[in-house]
Length: 139
Image 1 (cartoon, one colour):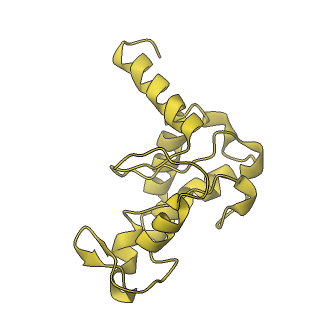
Image 2: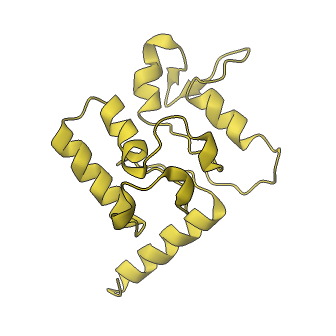
């Protein structure tokens, strides 16, 4: 699902419900699993959230630590975490930014090696541009 919505439309609220940070009334399911305590680790491995304002980041001050949070939480070995962080940073042209403060870096996003990414408009454009260049061998 991909949709552009204005401010206050509920995008963040929806994502906070999908990964179990917010609890509402009724039942929320992600990929057939109820968003409930026993299922949260599996669900959170599939549903991530990146805040638009880097000062609101939940995890770590440096880009490396923030990007590494997901793989670390998933219990991956240190070598795999290093590989994924390097890959993710390379995908968005941020190879030299690993030790910088998250608040200093734009675009603001975290990429786990997963099939779904919800990103802000500028990040979507950056990823699309990079994919287009790569598709034509123009990196």
